[in-house]
Length: 448
Image (cartoon, rainbow, N blue to C red):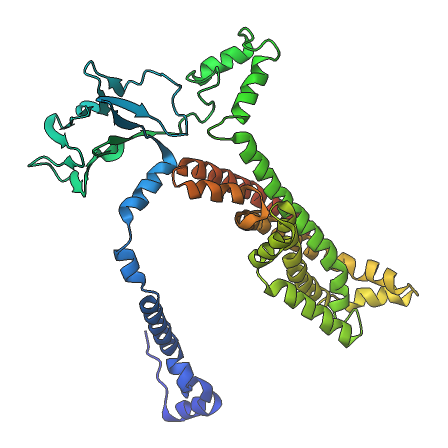
């Protein structure tokens, strides 16, 4: 193998012929490192200005973990109140158990108290108005109840804490308890979503899916006025806890908002784009005015338009449709106009040469070139607006976004939030695939 050598004459010739290679400017030599340094400095300043690291360090991660657990599990939250020397259970409004139901993990005792079991007998509480016996791993830790406070026992483990006048006990994922002078607030956690299919008022509550299917196919009618299958559907949609019918109705409302808003935006942007295109409309004032209209409509965020129309028309789908329509008219109009300005003039000139009118020239010389692009862009916006309609719904424009916000505000319906988020993800996934398939067909037709 021989080495390649360059003599002085060849070297000088290369320097003379290609000076830009051997004599690079400052930015060519150090530009990349300079840009990287500026980005690093900017990120450092941004982290400091927004206090990113202290925010993460001081974040309430315990509460965040509880919220995450609430997405895939449910909490029974009875309050065991001390009334006239007895323990009286009081339940939340979610109605997770029928009235007077026998609950295996919370049983009354002969002394007028209650035994609350967390997973096994080794982890439980025996509640009386005078004392709460807490068993952790089978070891007893008695919590005394006085007139104004609960008292943490000596030698209690770290999962038991004194918090002012109350004692909190953590049983891990199984739940926790707050022991006060007037009550014990119990939180008992279970995997899954409670009463997802039927609420406690339904005759199908507590039955397995196999039993329900058997009643639908061959069982005697529970309600003489309708079939069991119809009753099952009615009980499912009108589930008082989960409100499936209302949620599905709001989801359909969101889809209608996205579809109608995108459709109206496309229909209005189509003729306006011809006015904005400089090679179609030879009037600079009309071009400028139309493009500025597009800039105005799309420069105001969809969420701001939704807030404006909600104040004007009140809550409901109309403000959502109007917000999508205004924003999409501006955005699609700009995209359409740019596509028109890049059409092949030969096809248009060919139609014009046979004496066709201006309308016919645009119809046969321009529209066939740009129609696949127009349809493709409209389908993309429709897919995107399916997600955006959820956000604008949260500010009062109706749909599932408003329902989602209502559930989040309660701070106790995070399982319902997870349910609606899952529905939105499924819908977005389906519409994304439909939109991609339609766009592929439309753009494919253009190439054949």
